[in-house]
Structures are given as C-alpha cells and as structure tokens.
Image 1 (tube, helix red, strand yellow):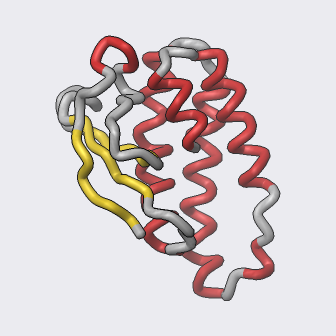
Image 2: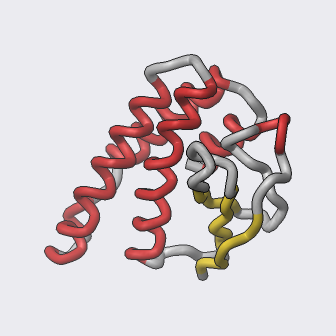
Length: 134
C-alpha cells in the first residue's frame, strides 16, 4: 500500500501498476487460518475491497484513474489497520481536503511530512495529519 501511495505521490503511473500488483500478491499470501472466526469476518470484506481497488490501479495507466481507485483502497486499508492494530510503529492518517472532487480523502503514511498521492508534484504538500495510529 505504502509503495502504491509513494508512486502516486511521484506521479509515476507505471510504478503504481507494479506496486499495486505487488500489493495484490502480498494480500494473497496472508495466512487467514491464524485469524479467529470474528477476525476472519472483519478481514474478508476489507481484503476484498483492497484487492479490488489494487486491481483497478494495476489495470490502468492513467494517474487520474489510479488516484480515483486509491481513495477506496485507502479507506479499506485504514479500516484494516485500525481494526487489527498490528503496527509496530506509528502510522499517520493524512487528509487532503481537495481530493475526491472537494470531498476530501485520506491516506496512510509512515512519515508526518505530507506527500500527497492525490495530486503528486502539482500539490505535493497539500494536506494535514488527521490522526496518529499506534
């Protein structure tokens, strides 16, 4: 996920395709049998949404379309991180008020510094840290 975000922030659609494919591959390797029944029930729809939107990103070469698919990818990834709370280090939930046709959109980053995946180089520092997830 973070590599997809970085590729979009760098306006690099071909790397976004590569990283979205890698995300799908990694998602497919998650060992679900170690999850408890209630965890599986929470994981399955989030993983499906992540996979679906990573597939959308990997299936197009236009940054605009990739960034549109990154919105629900981020929503599902944020929900997954918050639900399972398996982080060893803090991660930052960041927000751009202009993304998503002015509705705003979130993403995750390991750095506090804003590197906006929705606008890339044209507005790289647009946004703010909305929350720190420990």
